[in-house]
Image 1 (cartoon, rainbow, N blue to C red):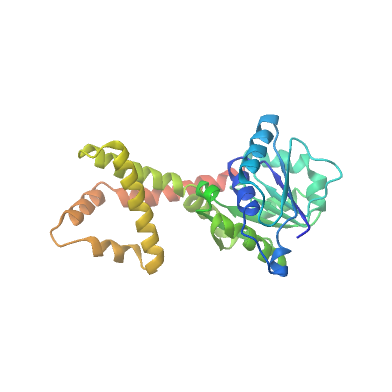
Image 2 (image 1 turned 120 degrees about the vertical axis):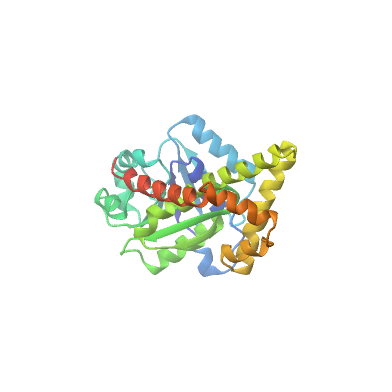
Length: 286
């Protein structure tokens, strides 16, 4: 370890990255240990925001890998971070690139969490020649239960790719895809929790409608989704295979599925992902 990792905009996603890297299990392998920073600096544009991040770090206790954290509202000019993670909203990215132009110019690697902004757009706004990576993650990543999709610029070295994979795996599942898939990943991964929660809420309210108390219905709906997800991953099966294993001929499950199909549940979800992908592609143009 030894490099400095800067997080510009430690909001929900920035804090998820901070938490994942800071709390990563101790690494004894020398080569892997070198992929972790010795220091993380977070920058928020308000005192309240910086204090919130500071309190979050204090709640963690000591980092297993000895990483220190500084929470600031502005960046000291003497600081030269090797890796910069940009956690701001898409509409704020242009201003951030301009405000911290010298920081980006001297960095080795820039990692953007902003939806819609293409790698070439970011590179066009940076004076130097750092590698640029795009990462799309989601809110469950705050707890290490998330997903992350990452794509890299052509000048990203294998070492930098390995470092990114090593760090972001602590958010949950980390998958590398070509940049052409990033807008769809924004819809599937970034928006996915909201879509899943809508379905979960509907399942919960169905239970309530049929007489199950609210709290029990909420917990049962959550564990049904959790258990089914774990079963899908453990068996490596297609969802339809597992779905039909639940269906008894003439039974209540197939009756419920037919009713949902008649109501357009599946097509509504597919169209929702499609529309979210379209809007994600537009975010970098605003």
